[in-house]
Length: 80
Image (tube, rainbow, N blue to C red; front, top):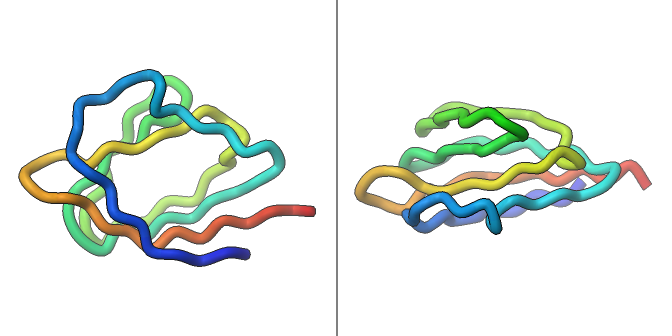
């Protein structure tokens, strides 16, 4: 497991922001701001205090929404 803090800038969504990590899983806990998680064909709005756990081998990407950057604690788990 690899934990880290990440900040997300507000910007318009672009398909080029999609990522994939084969065999990995991710956990995000939103500390501040609001974040849209684009996961496959879904958009999931996350706010401070929300968390999510997902298979990061699926296409996913994030953008902060609102007036401020979003900040999250992320934990990346690699099965290898």
